[in-house]
Image (cartoon, helix red, strand yellow):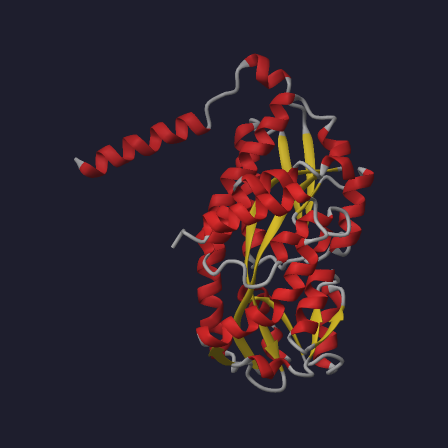
Length: 340
């Protein structure tokens, strides 16, 4: 009886999800192919999110709207793809928020090191009023933001030694995202930060042009950095998010019905993608160990020392943001830190 009830429930849910569009709504949907580019490999959680997004879009549009995924920088670097969105020559992208602070400076508040320590805190920060306020700044730059997906906590790898204490950063040449907050954060930790495009990173590690890098565990595994790095340390220094962007040029051509479909699909796919991402991070650690990397946690007392070392950097950058963003950030951090 229980199995039959579940089966009926599943059919009802499927019926609602796949219910035919009203004739009025159907008329507002055109045949469209949406090119969705990103830098991650096809086995990365972002790719899983894009695929789920495409499935939802197809279902909601009655098959009229299709998403074509272009992973692994097939359409260019993140910066090149962002420019293509602004020009209207590409429809969608999912860059890390860190890569577009040159366009929207206030997005840099998401990059502040050691701000949150759990996934629920990170999700709550970007899904709340702060995230909404940041998304509102995008249309003026030729972009529309639909949601924040999970990239995960950033951690450090290198070929020299484990990072177990603050002093272990001293002199390490670390590739960082070309982003002022990241550059000055690692300078404060006494590392030598070198800004490089992600597409150049594997070769830079292989040739020892840099000693290490910092990325979420799933990115480290997916890009096989274990082949050219020995040590992986759970510094968990930044909670990282991908922002789901759509070209405003393209967005303005869509009907209200089409825009609604895209917004709903981005949020539904977000919840799926986050689960995949959190699970993948845990699995990635096991796979990195199995591949021969030496893994270490960092003691809470050392995390506190690192947080203290970068506080002047945070204070400096915070003072440069709009007063409204400063106030909102402070209140939102206080709110989300209460979440376990």
